[in-house]
Length: 500
Image 1 (cartoon, rainbow, N blue to C red):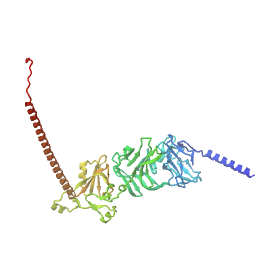
Image 2: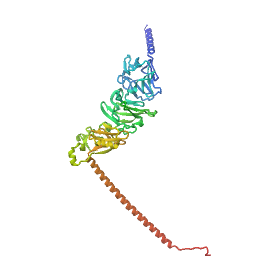
Image 3: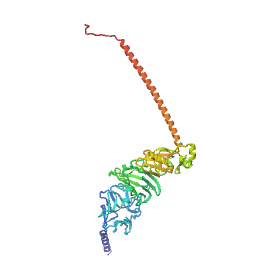
Image 4: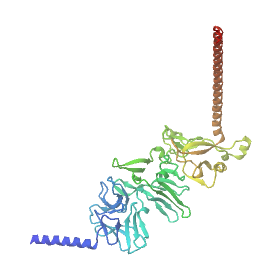
């Protein structure tokens, strides 16, 4: 009797499972999910070109389960997108499923058929399908009209890869920023965010919460000028797409060398890593990282302080400035920055200036620099008028004229200034005339010494050359005299055909 009951129970379970799959058919090894299908644990969508894969995954050392996208043919799995990163499932919940509801939205259901995550699109359709493209974009669209109501590319996680765009639209309030995982085993949003600023031109910036951690400087049409590595720009697939009418700006990433998989990752440690899959070693290789040294950390030397990783100490006040606190500065606490040593001409009393015959301020050129943050862009200014515009405004502390950008100026403290070993731009720092005078005097002394030295060398060279020529001439005359003497001492022999 017990055996028969067990047999009946097994038959009932088999029938129930068969009925479940008939009512809720699953999908496997296809790129498309329809409203009559579902994805179960252990089953995946695969893009048409066998490039990307979508399915359930559990991070290492985690008890949670997520829906994610990863590269199909890369054994060292790097998940590039996570749907329910803020609403994980229990890893033990093997009855979870991804479906398209009757309202046309994607729904992630737990084993009790509760909705854990949804696309929440306002467009409803009875002919909605979800397709995983070869770009890695998971698209929800109407199968008849082709209208896209939702796509994963508009909701990036920690990874920026070819085909994506990150940026913002000020009209709609949309922000597509990268946000780090909390830890390597926890995809929930971490502390670090990578995105574009609304500056003109925009910058690429990494924030730690609301605090700026690192910035790549403004875009010049080819690259972000605060990144000395020229490969981190247009030549590496990055391109800025502004739309002034729509008040939007987006950074696109398109790698045309399909044999090399390249991704940009905002890591849980707060670094921006460019990673390349190395087929030879079967591993991910980090070929660029920021911040890479203390000078890359935003404002490391404080206002009006410059940072140079090849110098010790790495922080130094800009020319014409002194430490705000000598005690802190000597202890290696440079965040307080520096203050101006001498007042500018425009900051002094005008009546005393006339009596003293004071000279106007000037500019000190600093080459190979990471230009400061918090700049103002002066549209349609040429290089010469850029200098005059800055000089005519007492609040203007520095200016730069950058190819591809134009005239940019700074007011107040100059923050996040760095001396690069390669590349960089010229920064023209406004100083009191007397600050420039010291250097002009030194330059004059150097020029006088140089001219004197060159003159002495040339004169000495001329004397040596003349002496050599005279000696050569004397040796030539002596040689001719010897030939002549030898010639007249020889017997003269005359021969004739008539001598016989």
